[in-house]
Length: 628
Image (cartoon, rainbow, N blue to C red; front, top):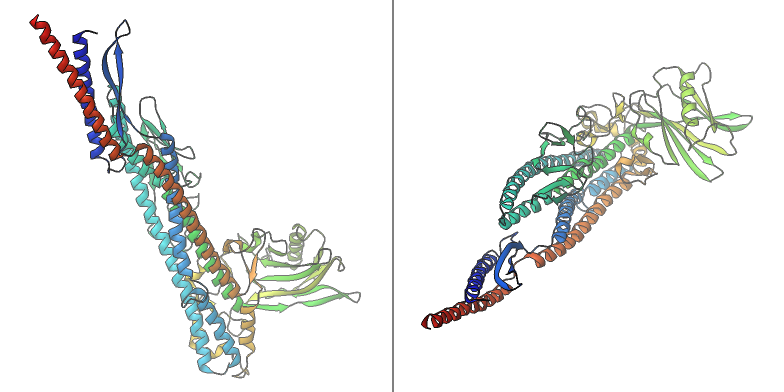
């Protein structure tokens, strides 16, 4: 190597040292900048045709980044945001429902209500006791109203948050597209766009908090962004999210794939040609804050509202349902069934019977609703093997046809079995007869009609204590469709009772002021573990209907909300640990260590001094040559 070559190499070395100093200084200056990754400069040695080193050249500026850990971190971040949303809202629901025994909690109000009727049984003639019973009823109805309002307020809040999140996602996708084009353009000219890569990653990281994303590099140095379910968000062109949020959400507002039935906003993914996909209908969102918010709006908060609605519905029916026992039917000296009078059975009312299956030793209960409308009561969707709910249209008024329809419904249900019972209509009556085809194998133990009382004096054991906000009688059906949804928001105490508290006891002429018959009948219904709650209440088993008293049910839903909040908190805490661990691993691979950079400065100082010394020596040698 000649002196000129040595001088050139030293000059290249000094230039490389200078670039390294610039990079190191930048690392130190941006050490605390979020998203900044440590930069390093690579170099290679140039050789002549004989394999002798003739210089040093810098190659490219690189980021210290573990991309595999980065992908895992973004996924964990999305899951953490989803879990955090669930924790926040389930905690709020847990506080709303309260705990057993807390002052002002749902359970305390319900217990006070039952206690007030127990007091009324003890002193039915006492005017203040009657007023206390009505006051406790109003307090319970008001509690259900207020809780419903709070739940719908949370759903409205979530609706707004979804809209804000969608708007931010669109901004991020647009920003990612803009900087991605700059990165590709700069890369094509041989420049190193490392600063822009950091900025793009910061936006991608924020995007991951809203959506579950997958990011794939392109050959040109850009990226493609899609959801974990495979829906493209950005690939050269940006696809836009649209959210048609609703300004008013109520208890009956639900998501539906049919826009005509949908009462809440949905999220559409639109391309530049105007084609769109409903992300909610295809399950396109799996984690991230948007998916978490949708889950809260459309499931968790809806479940909570439904639990209150079920409570309100069963509370109203507990007061208003009059049970008329069937007449035993005897054939050949043996009781084989029952006769039931259907004359007073209206749409939404029912008839029921229980029988002993001697082969299994199980007692089964069958309830047959009169359902003349388009949709049967929701309990008919249950597949409980021991509590069977069926629906039959009575609207024809032809009792022979009604009997045949009931026979067909029983035969067609595998839980009952074809031919197990015989249903007929004795001529010239409004009676339905249900007989066991084999009383030894299936013995009918009891049968009754369940009729909804519409007047305060219709029956001693039943009256409409609770009605809708317009005074309408609640039967479980409205216009031929289930009417449970939203009832907790509108339940009221019957205004006629508030005007005359004596009707709690003296519902018709000749009843003594101290007669406990009506209060006792109501108390028995409230404390009897016989009310059935649909699977939508979320407190029964997968194949069983929850059955219990009012207090049993309140305890169950309070426990459900507490359990759900506890699970959500545990899931969020665990996910935070996993996310923080991945963040620590990512930082270890990419974050600037100031001590390490200071050490690099010392190395660069030594290298700079060495290259300068080489130049000094070459200069002296040239001087020596010139003096010869």
